[in-house]
Image (cartoon, rainbow, N blue to C red; front, top):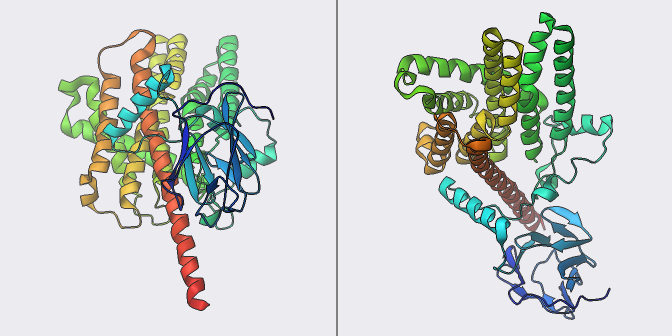
Length: 443
């Protein structure tokens, strides 16, 4: 292939950030840079899993390209033969993880958003996002799938369908079922809306409310189900947690409202303290299940509790709106709360609280002292603050308040997904090390 005449930026380089080649840095230049274990390579790797001529790096048509030669190359966790890399993207060769660092100028809006997300991660006490690319993450959403593929995707969490830890992919997941679930739910909801307006039959109201209340929450829950790359939680367990966790957190919150009387002087903002506490208490009822011990499991269980709470609460609000304001008020309540639940509300707040709890517990039995861990207190305090600001008696044009709060919550959730993926990788490395030691003992 012909090389582009455009010059390579002087500060463009590839650095190994983990693995046997940790600390190595490749300054890019015109032509090809060959990486491998052969003495003829431009960059000699110390990684035993890297082959003689593993991959080649080149500047092509004004872009940085990584091309597999004899070895396996993974871009953000997904195998590739040839890919264009952008700054901050990560590529794995063997057991070494490399990251592309690019020019510091011309960052524009994307750079500003990245800086903001880094600051949010710092406040929440989690690592900044690395290698995350939204376009790549959702690249499979519009791909056509058969019913059998969708059914297979939901088959998880049993003794025969939970993959061994060695086969779990630790790159950023590519969720897609959540979108198809959303489309299906939307079609059913719109059918109810059409029938309601056409026939004005009161018998349609329960179906309209329940479909509308569960529409987006259930879709978001499927998203978190797909984020659990371990696939060790069955759909039955998720549904059980939605029902049990949802009603338990609602009842506990109502008791807390009654006992504290906070809402009498704090108004709607008191829900940030009361309801987040109620949902966290519901999570504590199941936290000692040793079968589910990772951050990704906690993220999913938190989302399940939040889904139940959100759907049951939205159904109640829709009913009250319909009784007081009629059909139009009911539809407005369902639509607004449904759309806003994509940005914040209970699902994403409780998911990050659940992730924080499971992250701290790990392989140990839960103790009350774990609630004093600053990693939990930061996340829980942030969830409470986001909820309180959400309910605060002020608004900004075009729902900007909710968009800003939703951005914060999603940055933290994605950062916790990253924490969970690194946990899985650490488990894989520990298992491989144990296997190696066992082989050496028996040799």
